[in-house]
Length: 138
Image 1 (cartoon, rainbow, N blue to C red):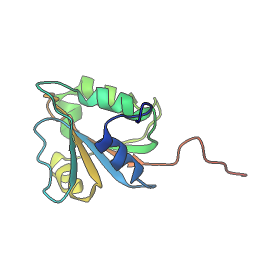
Image 2: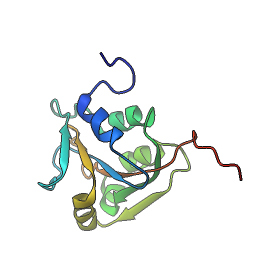
Image 3: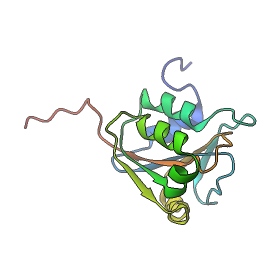
């Protein structure tokens, strides 16, 4: 029985299938997820769980080199934008694009984790990257 890392089998599966530069999206309760994209729906109720809670757990075992969020997140939900931006470290690069572009980019992600978060524009794309485990001689 799996007792360490994420115990959610859907999340464990999609994380294990991620490679360098693959995209994983964590979204709020209302995001229009494209039909062709794999979804791990962990919504339990209103604001259960929150996007930020999921990111805090993912950081424990998932390496990210960049985040992509909508301009509208920064404008409409600036506190959430700041918290998400720092969820994988203070110096994490964050790219902002229009929400319409984010929805188009969602068609290219390997998987989406859907939360019960009702914070407006609470969506983020995580770009998978190499973590601190990689050895480089120079």
